[in-house]
Image (cartoon, rainbow, N blue to C red; front, side, top):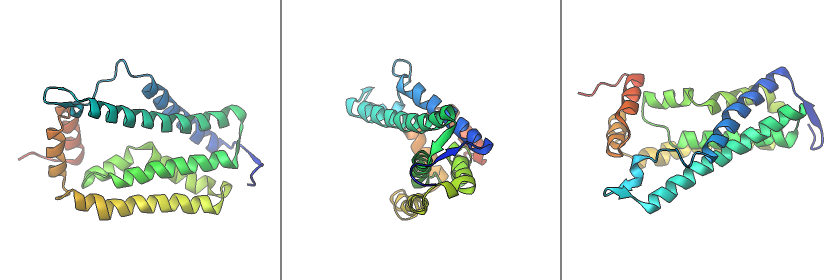
Length: 199
């Protein structure tokens, strides 16, 4: 595609865009307007009271996630409504998914939980589908950038994350989760998911 050409949606692309619009736009809108009922994570409390700095950090991260989701969903919804997409819109979707995947690679949890996390994230499947079915619609430079973002995420995981957190085991991760005050119900789900038994 050239910079001004419009690509009429195929059935496969419509399905992908609908998934992205529902998942990302839905999540983005929800997280933008959840301020009055969202339960703050337990780690924002220190010494028995809400820590102002940690509250602001959590708010920034949460709303930044909402903004990224909203943009990706908005692009997808626009394509659905128009019935066509430009090369730039497709490239934005490629770049957005690659950046999210880069982050996922960087923070992979230990052992089987890493596989479970990747298999439960829609970005994993959407990235694969986009590369397999729609790579011919974008410039080769964009594909290279997307691949490099993924490689960078894996490199950071192997050469930085795994070295900073030692030992990089599920038990260490689990102990830290408990210390951070995450609910026991969530921990039990993770334990069952990977077959962990606390001795």
